Amino acid sequence: MKLQDFGLWFRYFSEYEFKWSASVPQSGYYDIYYDGQRLVQLWNKFSFLIHDDKPHIAKLKIKFIKSKEGYYLVEKCPITLDDFEIMENPDYRGPP
Image (cartoon, rainbow, N blue to C red):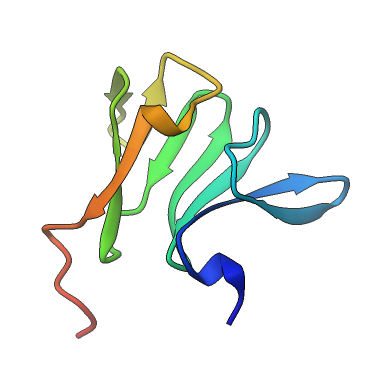
């Protein structure tokens, strides 16, 4: 097991490779992981995809617009740790 399998981590692309960070990257594409599972993908500065099929889910605390395609547009970037929270997913049913 790796350290990234526990707690909150950010995976981002830098200098031609993916790297891990315990703090929110300030620019570019990155993913938010919690306990080894990807919960959020940031595609560009203001567009997020929140995965809702995991035991935990990310909840945005900032103003957002949800698109028909299922992603979220946020008005503030870069985000901070105060802009979202990780919580248990009430709709998670576990593996079939």
